[in-house]
Length: 321
Ligand SMILES: Cc1ncc(COP(=O)(O)O)c(C=O)c1O
Image (cartoon, rainbow, N blue to C red; front, side, top):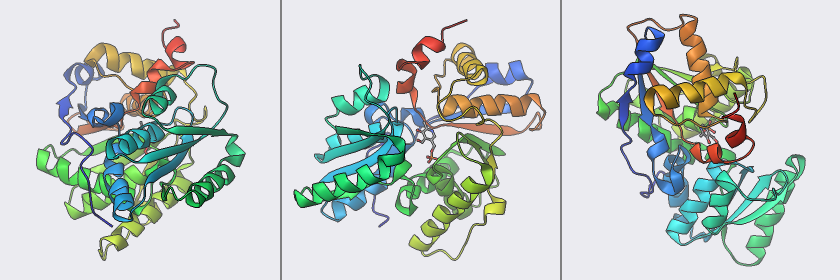
């Protein structure tokens, strides 16, 4: 169950952000470029899919099924993984079918995924029906959970922490966007295995900190069991900041907009409007409130998502002054 197939371009580079660090008066900012994992425009889900798709193949499955929002980065990478591996792909997307497919949805369709739309409150029922139907047609479905966040998916960021260890940066902090929890759970597992001293701070995109910490601890503990590790994780030791998500999932506020324009114009780093834009807005706010010491090394982990920059309403709103 910890088998892996290669889908991502790894290791992803770590770059210094000297202009931004100087402009803000410290800390020393670095970025880990998981927007460059490569598969179908890349992002964090590709690392999870190296393990989830390996599990699907080991079980003889022939169709990857998953779910997410209309602009889901996860679903876009599932569709690309399926294409790469010669598997079918069915995506159940929560929301209305837009007139013109844009951003991630456009890429889902280019990759050949079958897309089904369902209202958010009926998504799970639609997913169960689609899976049953695929089974009845002998399409051998493999159901990938929302965000690829389970113990198997978490192996992707466990491995990423081993990769970071090899890269020898030794950051004091790792800051990134957290939502379904698999990325953070994997980081925690890998940090423990590599005895990393970095504080792993997820900026919640959409969920209260308490709820998300419990989810993350659950995934990390299931991962520890899978790896037959004695270690366990407790919600109280998991760092989640939910101060920046009150506008709601996917809502672009002045804070995300400022972060996106600042990173693009100071460092030529393109963030996304939903996840990394929100996490970077949180990072900037924390820096401005003196949360980090000026000489600390802070690694902002770019988790991808950039195709949503090309989808409405973001494409229009980002350039409005
Ligand atoms: C670009 C991007 N960043 C961060 C995340 C959050 O990762 P996780 O769901 O593993 O917490 C997602 C999840 O969809 C994402 O698409």
